[in-house]
Picture (cartoon, rainbow, N blue to C red):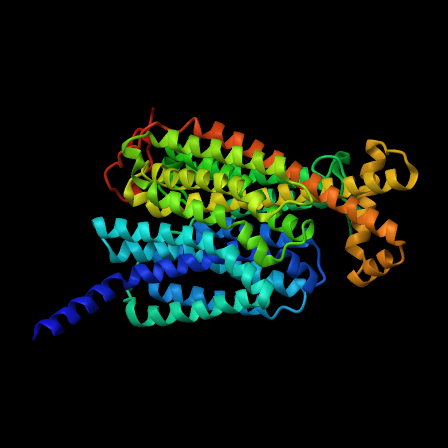
Length: 566
């Protein structure tokens, strides 16, 4: 064999060796891109499918809810199903969802295809990517593979708004889903050729009770937050009537009862898991993992971070396109400083923990994020330009880049390697739960403040007088109902019937209301940043050393996990 042939053989061997990591990275990229790409397309989807922003808010929240509910239970499937076969099945499910969403002729079809079918497939993809890495790599190669996945995630977050904005502006938002289908075909082809089957004779150690309780808890909390946007958080905004019966226990909104019930189910879930562990029966989440103080502080910080990130990513594109008249492409461009700064800083700051405590890097990142949000809140007006947003967006991106990578490393290092699949599932589940809740809260605040501000402006213009708080709320609810029950043609006909002066005045009122609403959202998400900063105070200063590797089934006592005290 000559030298050229030997070199070719080595290159082929290297390619085959790293191909499983490439398959895992592409699968992760698919899931990340699906979320980040669609935020900038919300106004276009609303117009194309004749739906509402609140309906899209619900679709995004339900997508996250499905993922949050199924990520951890979905991870148990790999114990009894060959990873290669499971990946192909999951991608087949995903392809059905993305094609259905791409050809959707109304909102209901989009909801089923994207929020439900794709949500289920995305929940299964996350633990599968981890399994691929664990089964094919060891030691330093495994660390490199996981690092590649982390980099791909950052790239997906960075490129998503640009890809979604470009397709929506110059083609159609539907091509985003069709493009995902083409990527699915590529991943399936690579999987069939390069990913070796690894049959297993194990049976699924299924915790049915824990699975049901966790799903009910997550659905209750997120479902309640979605109801809150329509019916109020505590005091009812509208009557909820089901089969002729008024659902309003003790005169309170059904949302607060639903959220309370979800919390009760989660409390019951934790108690169930503890009993399962004491009886040496299968658990969905080993209680020892949740008792680890560093890990618990880490996932709490993750969940809190998802609140402000979801509010930011959902409301900003809506504001830019609805209030400022940006195209979807221009909205993507406005997010470029944020996206690129997040990617670059996340990559270059990985080694900084050798010089600065990770807890301090995380907290510095949070402070920068809060400063960036406040700068954006102070700059918002109807004449805001992309260049004026660049510095605040850059500050937020730098902060998020410092925050995310360090928190992942600090949290995952708190548990033994044998618990990594469970712990990564918990992190992703908590993140999706926070993302769904944050989308619902920020979206409902944006809409409620907007309609209330429109009522104030129109009333002052028409009568010269202001309205009281109760009157404002009632009129805002009636205005929202009227907007959501009329077609775009009817709305346009109403506006066309006004005098030019009244049309201009109405436009000014709407723009001012949108600015006020977005400023309120930035105040809210800044408060979420402060809550996250408080949660981060419970993290240890230094990166804990992993405990010895052990089988999850035998680890059920606190002393089997490493101590993580400061």
